[in-house]
Length: 420
Image (cartoon, rainbow, N blue to C red; front, side, top):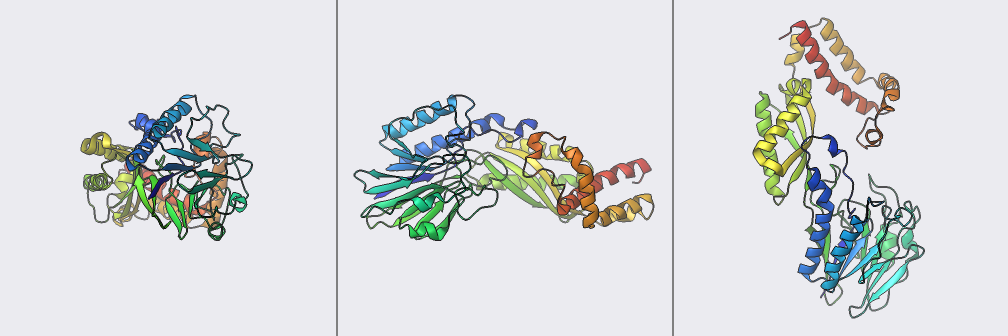
């Protein structure tokens, strides 16, 4: 039986994503996470006795900070070589030749595919042919797979390719191709990379995205790892996902409907965290809490968001120690009617009415966004480039922000007016 591992998007020594700004964030653990996940990949390859390992691009994360990134990679490849396991790699957009000025010669036992044309590497004794081509530059807009050669007769043929396939949300449209086009090549297995979410595009032949091996931010939630592929004597392939990550990102949704007291809601959140810990192999979690439902605690949380976010963080530390860290708390609850009764029809009531009308007036929201645009240009670049940053041209986003601002403003006005 033939066995191999298919991994992609390792992003070795990937930079942190703004977590330095948060007190108590597990910075050291995150800095080492991609290295430890790569180490887990090597350990798995050795323990499973695989014949070879495929890496479908984005081995690196762009320019090296120093040579330690390359030295660590060499140390892991040496472990594979000592076990007699070969490695086949194509460069992706993050590690294209034009992006990397520092480099180290890779050890024996590694095939790094050229970028000017597809290559075929035949593995002696296994009757396996691995076809691949690296990215020559960070942005490839053409279909690289169209030039891949015909399958080698009598061999198990693998296509190693970094691609967006037919396009995936959140990923640049690099080296696009179609599922039909890949299938028509007549290969037995397509080992894809670039898309960080695990997905089997086709079962026959198998066309697979394994996802990245370690989540790096909240848009990369859930278990991360690689595919273990087993091929029987008749050439039939089976894939099995193997987790490799050492820290896991999770969105934890909590329904606050009917909750009367703020600390009762915190207890509910902690219950959710503990449940997720037990369901995720005991790995440390970085969690984003999303609180929904209509509840009387909405105003308390929304009026003093920093206080209650840190109350939640404190409770998480008390409950789980360093096993859980709260990345963010999103309050998605609705306002119960009792608060409206207390504000009446005076100035505060008129302000609430105006905010309610503004929230649903698309033209006024667009005008408001234009007014705020100049202010947004003064924000640090990392905030402006964040996919989840201010979307001042999006009326829906502005409406949601107004809903969040409303209870904070209301809380301050009620305290000033002595409303209890």
